[in-house]
Amino acid sequence: MVLTDSLATFGKYCLFIKRVIAIPDKWRVFLSRTITEISKLGVDSIPLVIIISIFIGAVITIQMQLNIMSPLIPAYAVGMATREIILLEFSSSILCLILAGKVGSNIASEIGTMRVTEQIDALEIMGVNSANFLVFPKIVAFILFMPVLVVFCMGTSLIGGYLIALFTDIIPVSRYIYGMQTMFIQWYVWYGIIKSLVFAFIISSVASFYGYYVKGGALDVGKSSTNAVVTSSILILLFDVILTKLLLQ
Image (cartoon, rainbow, N blue to C red; front, side, top):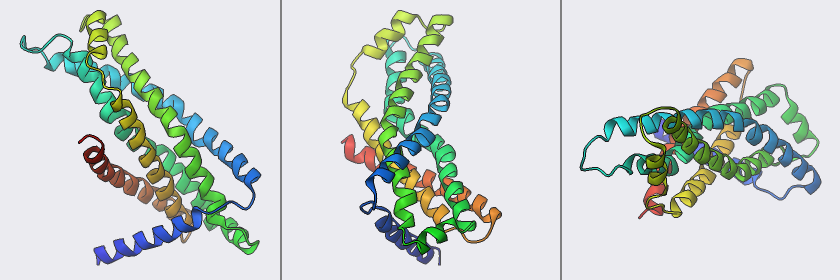
């Protein structure tokens, strides 16, 4: 029964995406809405990303230093391990799990509210492809701006570790910086960005799907937001495993 429902939902999602990814009727309106969504979904998320990244970078540095005390381990290992954790996982996977809660619930509740107040029905009556008109700009905007959020996350996380080295005696600043520079692999940055693009599509499309097909009233809008966040988080973890296997062989 669960498998049957899951397959039915997946089929419905595929048909929804087919309606969403269509040529816009008016490119000027599409571009205008996309810019608005970039501001709402992307730019407004920058303060949250910076705050979380600084504290996570600081915590990772502290934990690495406290747990790597063996004389057999090079002194630069703390900075290098902090950098690898941030580039490989935190700046893409963990960040997108956090954004699934903020951006995903925002999209699902916004579109869900439009559904229960019959605004989407009004668009359909006017002959507008409501899925394309409402959802496509959100998906495009979030995918376009996600690399910016990832780069902010990478930079501010490393700055968080640097601040710990600067204002405490846990690790010398020179040792931390040397560790960050040691054996740097540029591909890890692109790896994080590529993963984040996939995760951005998952968050925006899944949240839009659950919001678009809300039935009922305000309580159901809240349930759809919860379902969107949970489903997005599970899919992010699933595709994290798949992309890691494909990109880091």
